[in-house]
Amino acid sequence: MAAGAQYRKLDLPNLAQFEGAGVYYGATQVEAEMCRNDEVGIVGGGNSAGQAAMFLSGFAKHVHLLVRRAGLAETMSRYLISRIEACPEITVKAFTEVEALKGDTQLEQVRWRNSKTGTSETHDVEHLFLMTGANPNTAWLQGCLALDSRQFIKTGSDLGPEWSQRRPPHMLETSLPGVFAVGDIRAGSVKRVASAVGEGSMAVQFVHKVLAE
Image (cartoon, rainbow, N blue to C red):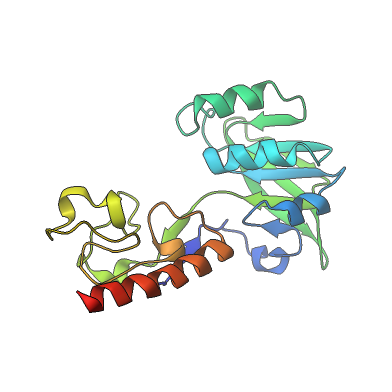
């Protein structure tokens, strides 16, 4: 099974216009180079947002970390918060939500609003990273496989008591023996194309092992 996941998106009418043209869902070396010496915005308050902020701060002129909550303590690891607080290139904006995206063929400006004060700010931000997580495409399974609290498929050693066979589960094997999950749909995956392709190749070998049993 490789049904993937869907990124959570902002409820903005022109979001699709800027996806890949200023709005991104991952911060890799490619995006970082495009952000060099520019201001960037990151939406999210979890570890992925914090890691992206630290990574991009080494390239960007300044990083605005936009968080809907009062701060980062509830959703981010303490070590990341400490690093962000010590980084002068990162500003955390609490109670903040993106209100509008502006530009022609490329993102040029982002307007965000403080939900507590009601005030809005417009910045010349040409790169906006949405690090708000993803929803796995597992609803169709209707409970026939073990899922984690976020509805991603559990595999391998993560199954614990949900594994019913005498032999240990193979890596990538689900709670249903002989059924494997790879890529973004799997709990604990790194959400990268290269990793998903590698897991797919590995699963083929495990399938042969199961068939030979």
